[in-house]
Image (cartoon, rainbow, N blue to C red):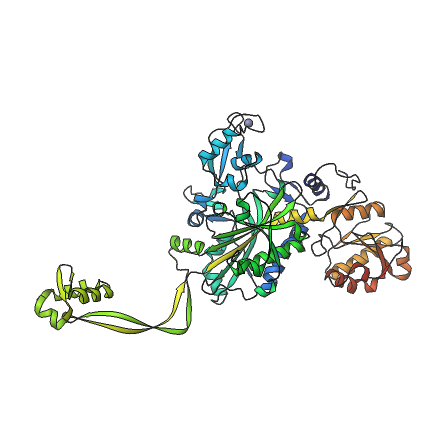
Length: 590
Ligand SMILES: [Zn+2]
């Protein structure tokens, strides 16, 4: 297979062009190709793995480093109980139809969307309604034009058995959040038993999609980054909201969507909170962070939006949900992150199912003095009346709430308990003081959840540019899979060994480099541009005399000349974002 850059303009759409480029340059390709492939699985190649790591490093930089979110890593397979408790076994289902002729299976809601029914409408439908709409629009199998059978709900989790026991059902996790909830008590201890705190898990998840046909957008095995942020619902304020208060969020509101309109409303975080459009400050904070994250991945803010989810579109655990979407060439608006206010849903479910207490204790700032009504039987008076049964009367009386006894005495002068008549003068009713120092409660949770593969794809699509009929991947410099390419003008006369020396110097400085001596320098530049290599360093005959080299910018193709000695300091400044390319040295006029 040729590794040379194709220098023709793509005649196909960006999605096809990117998938072709991705195979050619080693970003990603469909897995198991030698066996004919298997839909929904993808392999990241050398450049893709680097890029994906850089995208995930951004997530860590944003949340783990900058705001101190914890990180954890747990197993992909979980015992059935976990997903029974979380509600997934009941709810994680999609409507499916099967072609009665070729037995191909399809997502019924996606078929209806192709007929112009909005996803919001399709998601709301019962199976009967789905069947009716399929009939009405005369939807047939796209492979063989066969008719579809009755729609059914299909569980999209991968099911397995744990060990050799058929009864020990396990599921591949369809998200990474449940691991965090089931480990809550340990995490809370690590957090020194203080709220608020958050924990992120970035890892593989599995969804047995019915018919994934959208490349990296819909995979059966993918990487998810679930961040669960726990807080006290009585103290819901975000103490760092000022960092993002003026960030503008373009939101497609429910009320707009219900009018079948796609206009977004631009609101600052502060406005969205004041107008109660976003109910949780923490949720608003994470939405603003998500917007900044996508901007740093190269997606301009006017290509991003947030969708407020309608009631019937929300996941079963969520009280308010927004999806962050990015506009892509082939698929239109695609979800890249979801923002759900999960309240205490998950912890409550796991508490109930496991029997383990997952409440946290909160000490009141000042202990509360509580007056408690108590009813005490006066045995000296009950004894003479009931003789040997006086004890039973007292026990029966103790089972009745104090307030009820007090009310009856006041109203009727007596009360019947277990067929015994007790009169007011036989009991002592008084207020007693108790000190309450704190209370136990279940924390609330807001969750931002990112699809790592989708972040990867949109970063790639927005980096994809044409310059002079050639493909240039203009990644933001903080995520470029390779920072510096090192090229000897010729692979001889000591230029090659000098170039390797320079490469060594740069790797020792911590830069991600690549050495390339194959083909003409022009071809090497073209290859590097197509791979998104940020800078190219060329070693020529002058280098051997005066120790200067040429640095070439991937995006502008400008070149500058500086000494090898200056290189490390200048490059650090450049990759830390403190210098522009022009500040690296003197521009060579061409
Ligand atoms: Zn068919």
